[in-house]
Amino acid sequence: MATTTNFFILGILFISVIGASGRSLLDNGSAGGIYDVTKFGAVADGKTDNVEKIRAAWQAACKTSTVPATVLIPAGTFVTGQTLFAGPCTSPKPITVEIVGKAQATTDLSEYYSPEWFQFENIDGLVLKGSGVFDGQGSISWPLNDCKQNKGNCASLPSSLKFDKIKNAIVQDVTSLNSMQFHFHLHGCSNISFTNLHITAPGNSPNTDGMHISSSDFITVTNSVIATGDDCISVGHSTSNITISGITCGPGHGISVGSLGKRPEEKTVNGVSVKNCTFIGSTNGARIKTWIGTAPAEAKNIVYEDLIMKDVQNPIVIDQSYGKKERVPSTSVWKISDAHFRRIKGTTVSNIPVSLQCSSKNPCENIEVADVELTYVGPQKSIPFANSCINAKAIFGGKLNPAACVS
Ligand SMILES: *[C@@H]1O[C@H](CO)[C@@H](O)[C@H](O)[C@H]1NC(C)=O
Ligand SMILES: *[C@@H]1O[C@H](CO)[C@@H](O)[C@H](O)[C@H]1NC(C)=O
Ligand SMILES: *[C@@H]1O[C@H](CO)[C@@H](O)[C@H](O)[C@H]1NC(C)=O
Ligand SMILES: *[C@@H]1O[C@H](CO)[C@@H](O)[C@H](O)[C@H]1NC(C)=O
Image (cartoon, rainbow, N blue to C red; front, side, top):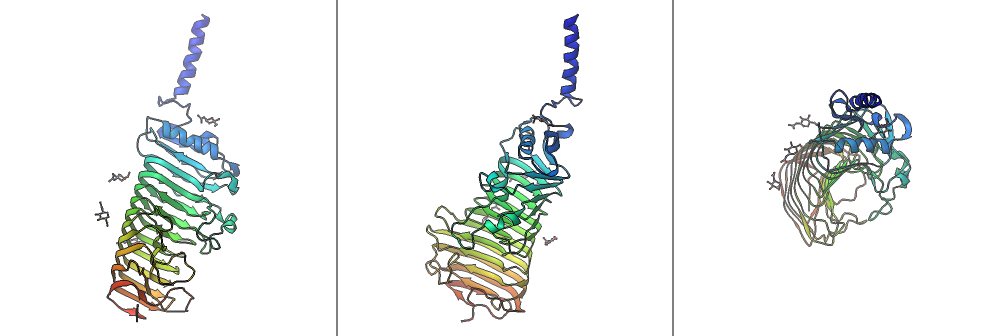
């Protein structure tokens, strides 16, 4: 009799643990594969550090094997430190992270063991989406950034969203606000599509690149608004097949290929297309920048086309003396070839619409500047570029006022 009762009680416990859907609730997942961080103990009080709770939600979602899983950050403000979302996951692809509320970065820098805040790593098949906000609270750490004084090797503050070895991913709609350093930082990634991003930081915030891409291929960034204190997008070394379109950039330092060649392991950039973008009050527009460098490599097959410049300081720039205080003629070991600047229109606030400063060791080859109509509207800003083209074999077409590369 006693044994029967025990079995009966066990049976009720079993049913309540398995739940109506038949899936185990022990991992705090709920119907539809939603892993709401609050079910894992996260609290939206704007002060508790939720890092362990959010990581627990990820762990459970990543390790499930039944339905596609979604980690949900619901409405409210969730403070969190360095949040690792690491794969590989056993859940059916893709795994989704949806942010509806706000994730707010811990400002205590001792909480970060490497320069990343949200760190996505080793995931094949990821969707990151939602109307929510990643708030890096950068204004508190920006004064610690010494990159202006120490350009070669400055303190690394956390990037807001680091993507490390992520492939086959979609990122859409999210907002990144006031990152401490880069907003998005991609390394070792392949086939990611970013769309409808909102990236915002003040024009004077240091090194807050909207997105920095290196060692990656087949990345597209479309229809996004980026206002920040450094490059809106920078395409770094060892990259290919990068497509950027429909970006509104400014304030910011433009959409750049580079800087390249700072370190010897940096490899060739092949295939960057920047199309249908508008630059508003940015310091640069279309820019390719290399250091003098130590190991030879190339930047080639780069197309900037259908761009609108509104009051941009340097609409079209090739700068192969990057990182040098004085813009002496470059002897860079990097070679730039097949770079096309086409159908670029609008206004410039410097009287230097086009500056091509190439390497004497490796003159630029097959540079095309076609259908470019840029008008100087002043006021003159002090800029380091010469109104000339050095070591650049360029083909010109279109109307430039003032003319480019007059000798
Ligand atoms: C489920 O959430 C509770 C708090 O709501 C927490 O104590 C528990 O550790 C969580 N379980 C797992 C497996 O994360
Ligand atoms: C790229 O990723 C998307 C989204 O995961 C996927 O649908 C597509 O098949 C992938 N493309 C290739 C070439 O693998
Ligand atoms: C150009 O970019 C805008 C966003 O700035 C977008 O709305 C539009 O669809 C794009 N046009 C084409 C032809 O891609
Ligand atoms: C990748 O980019 C290179 C260089 O522009 C180009 O030749 C190649 O066709 C591209 N590959 C694909 C699959 O689009």
